[in-house]
Picture (cartoon, helix red, strand yellow):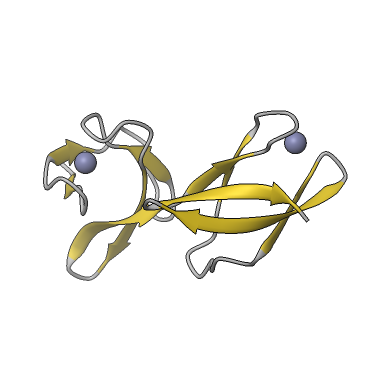
Length: 94
Ligand SMILES: [Zn+2]
Ligand SMILES: [Zn+2]
């Protein structure tokens, strides 16, 4: 069985069949918190993956691992600037 530990709450999460390295899974305890899972020589591990919803269309965009506040994302043909507050990213019209 392939399990990972949520880096946020410490819960063990069973990976669904067919999960591949780099996929996003959700922690059932941390509402809406996505985890990016990875497989390496030591087994499976997970890191927090931040997501942000587009202010225009509410589409949820997964952010890359090296995202920083101030970075730009694009959706709906517009560019949004990322801000980081209270442990979560938000997108603001640039
Ligand atoms: Zn969790
Ligand atoms: Zn959008």
